[in-house]
Structures are given as structure tokens and as C-alpha cells.
Image (tube, rainbow, N blue to C red; front, side, top):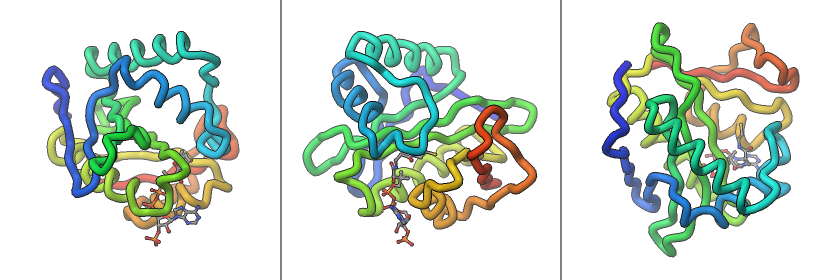
Length: 175
Ligand SMILES: CC(C)(COP(=O)(O)OP(=O)(O)OC[C@H]1O[C@@H](n2cnc3c(N)ncnc32)[C@H](O)[C@@H]1OP(=O)(O)O)[C@@H](O)C(=O)NCCC(=O)NCCS
């Protein structure tokens, strides 16, 4: 496994730029993480205001600085709007493992945008970071997420449990 996020790995696709998060994204991130449709199946602490969102952005920057995670803002090339996020975290050196997390603004869903982001992030994870396994935990009723993962060739792992989140399923993809 190899990380070097000192120069942040900006990734490009046909319609998207995946770039580093910064404090100018505060409102967009607050909007995403408080959108009821986005968070319906995601069990995590809610951001209550912009000040908490700025603290969250600072924590993400620290993760990247300390090589403990990499978090991209997904920007549409069409209008330069932040439309979602995607990240790799919970690295396990011995197993060359990372977990993937992702979310997209509802008005941009079902247009293939997250599939496009996945392709470039998985390629980065396997080729540049030399990962061997990438795992997604997703709520068992999150059909959109499950369809996305299956389309990306992730495989359901019935034996694996997400501790503390009994409704989550594990999907894994290997290099
Ligand atoms: C999950 C999510 C990221 C999917 O993003 P997306 O850009 O809409 O996905 P895509 O358009 O690339 O679609 C991928 C596949 O999933 C299918 N799909 C997407 N949304 C779907 C839905 N609501 N219902 C059924 N299938 C769906 C697509 O049809 C496509 O399959 P196909 O190529 O066979 O048609 C998006 O729904 C989202 O952000 N949800 C809220 C946040 C979330 O749940 N994140 C995951 C936490 S584990």
C-alpha cells in the first residue's frame, strides 16, 4: 500500500472533477449532509450548522494530511457546482484495505455520475495506492447504492458484519 496525498490527487472524468475539499465548500457540504434523501440510509452524526461543518472540513483535512483518508469533492464540469463527495478511509496496511464512502445531490442522481466517479476512484485505489480490497457498507434497503455497487462488480459478503450497524451489508471488490 502506498499513499502520498501531499500533492492532492485531483481526478478527472468526462463530466466531473474530483478535487480536494476546502472551507469554500462549507455550504455545499452542509446542504448535502443535511439533505433528507441523501442521509436516509446513512447512520452518522448530523451536522447542525455551518460552524460544525467547518470543523468537519478541518477534520477531513487532518485525515488527508496524516494519510489516514482521502476525500474528494465531486464537481460538475458543466456548472462548477459541488454535486457530491467520495472518499477512501479506514485503511488497513496489512490487508491493503480501504473503505469507500459516497453521496450525491438528489437532483444529480440516476444520471451515471457516481458510476463515473467510482471508475476513477477505484482505478486510483488499485493502481496508485496499491490497494487489494475496497469495501462498502450499505444499508440493506439502499437499492440505489446496492445497484451502483453491483454494477461496479462489488460482491456481497454475507459473512461480514458492520459492527454496530446491523442493517448494513458488506460489499467488496478485489484488485
Ligand atoms: C447511491 C448513489 C450514490 C447512486 O448514485 P447515482 O449517480 O445515482 O448512480 P448511477 O446513476 O451511477 O447509477 C448506478 C446504477 O444504480 C442504479 N440506480 C441508481 N439509483 C437508483 C435507484 N434510486 N433505484 C434503483 N436503481 C438505481 C442505476 O440505474 C445504475 O444501474 P444501471 O446502469 O444498470 O442503470 C446515490 O443514490 C446517493 O447519493 N444516495 C444517497 C447517499 C447514499 O446512500 N450513499 C451511499 C451510502 S452507503
